Image (tube, rainbow over all chains, first blue to last red; front, side, top):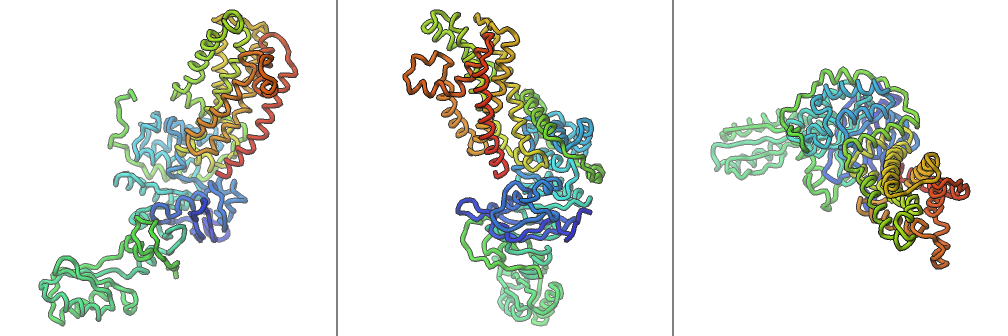
Length: 339
Length: 282
């Protein structure tokens, strides 16, 4: 496929962009393997869009370097432009034109002859289920249709690298699933996709590797599994029969698992956060050991579940604040998760 | 809009990932379009926009008609004895003034495109960089031509008779459109530089009003105070108005034509590169 020397679609080192006093992107290092979906996860204002704009040659970096398929985004901008496409709130289509006109326009700008451009536009509209709306002005499209035409406009020529900047923000769940299907279809044909999102489940669904960005910095990077295990192996949720036994159970678990144990509002419920530090056992092994201990102590467990940590928990653990307040001050250590 | 069908309906046809996959298999890319072809494609877009939003022709139809009528009857009696005599002097000038005023809409279109998001898509394409801008201006050149034809028609109805005949009139319009094309690079620059449509509008007015009024469009500058004559006689609008007036009147005002083209070249040489620098840096 389009892998060149390093097999990396994107490689950045110390990428910086400042707007006045703000360092919107503050030393981002990324290595995106070709042929995969790479998730860039972060709250509003974390620097995701600014990073994408620099990689797509729309913004000039103030510091650091970025290469796309080995081409420098500043010195070889035109080479880069020939191989990437982008879709985002800002890289849209012309609302005054119809769906067909937009695609023909872009097709012609990519060098297709009139006939070829029309043909490709028709096929794409058909595949995206937009044939009926083809002759309507895009300003009359619904949110879901809008996103489809935006993506269609980005794959008039099959790009080697597709930037999808928050492709499902503001969409209803059904339209969101359809966009996900499109992303999977695109990457299955060998296109590398860089996906930015605020939605943890979106990154979880689509991406094979994820970088978590906060305040212009990569605060964690790795596979989904690596990210999750950096937070803990998961948590065990228990419901006891007798609320009187809860304190006893908590103490037992704490000793047996070396885990943080929290009582829940429900007087019979407990949650233990497993850490990977407790031996090399998997979460399931640790959990079954805990159950054994409880049984030996004569504590009856009514209900038991083992939960994987959500990416929400990952974010909270990494940044010390939740995903919605990027503006708060907090001291986040720049810990690299990837081994 | 008037169409009863609502595209918001939930019954949106599903995405066919199979046919999508088939479309993505082809990795061939046609050769890049030439600078000319890319610019013409953007010009085509401007024409499509006129087709879909014909209201935007208001500024090149109603506005010029209003200008001709207003100034002919407002000043005609006082300045030349009668509106009919005045229009002989006024029409080429008011034509220049109106078209140069209309150029400022270029900046607004650029700014709107940036705001709507379509601009960055164009910037991310591997095409000749100035073609986006040239496309706006080609579309606008068409608008300037429409405005000129409208005004000439109204003028003829009111009694304007160009001694230069068809050839003189065509030469005058050609010079005016060429000058306006070059002059518009000021607005592409402001469109890229300023943040909101309102500020683009504000700055445009500040430039356009003094520049067009302080000229020989309405009256002969001889009655003006010396310091003002110094400005008016050297203004590009005065040169252009004199050139167009001459051409349409059947003369060959070589010096004025040269001055107008010289100014046009200067505008393009100065504001073209600044525009492109902003475009690349944005």
